[in-house]
Length: 472
Image (cartoon, rainbow, N blue to C red; front, side, top):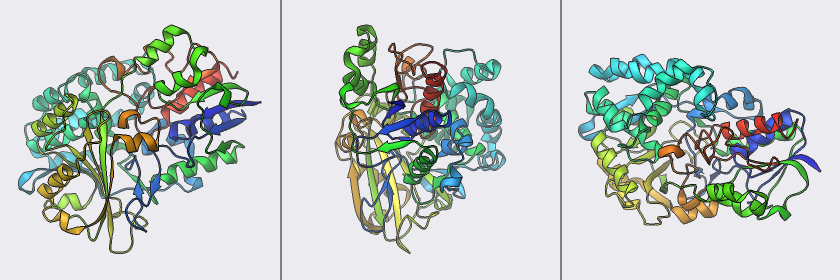
């Protein structure tokens, strides 16, 4: 018997395993596939020598989440690379809204909207440490910083279309904020999308929007090394389909979706709780295209050449229209496209003189409709001649993502829909979302607070709860 079994070797599962091992518990991690990492994997998807991040690619929360800040993974080879500019949001005519590491530089570049950016996004950045304690965990608890959390909530409750229209005057500032809010996978006229925009933009001013040298896989590699240092064990190609696949243990932490948890645990959970898990809603899918390029992207705006991340969507109204189409179950003709330029800043990603490009857009849940042409139309709009430099493409839709990682149900890379009460309360409403009614079983995937992203907080929070209760 071991003290703890962790099902799933994604970043949350590894964070849970490391936390339990640091507390002196014996730990075994079971991973269904032959690879460790979940959403943090890197592979040669196009041509030999071109290394592409399979899922997550830019890691603002690795730089500043409470878990990773204390994890000490630099000792195990994790190196963050900071592009000169975290984010650029180009507009027609060669203009762009630019998010710099510095609040002051961002404000200066936004002109008449600089003071408003400082008042809203800068306010969150300056209070990040206090907000992270309360916002990156379950909300049904007494907050440590109630006044700060309340003031953030008053801003974040608004739909981002309403907030951006009121707060900013220029298309550059409105578009820049809209692109951040659109990471929520929720139509921008819905409540709480402003919170998503603030929680993504502010970290750029705190710790940047870095990438990892060598690819996202190095996050999982460093976490694996730390777990091994503590005596923990990982076994790959060990799928868990039922309780019969689990060795004896005092506790099991599941880095799986609610749907998988029900399938595995079955009758060991009360019927009412099982029904609540089956009602958990999954969000839109992603259509992703990775490129091998003969040269850098020929952006019209010069700041895009300096940016690790580029958001393609145009104005606030255009981004909102694209996300509304996805929310209605339709495929937008002009999608909001997220772009990462790794090889400009990390020479391990491509052969000398060549480049990679990581792109995806949102699509209806479960969709495998090929949106490559729509993505490339947006790239051509802001970088004329892009198609001429493409050497190879790798396309991935909902079925590819789910086959790659069973947690990505219907191509949902966010761990579940982020709208309504499911944003703050997931997978069910309750004060202890990581604990199931069976005191041995915990859930620690992105379907728990604070949701999607590479931050390790779901696993860290779940493990700390298990240590306080079952593993005392």
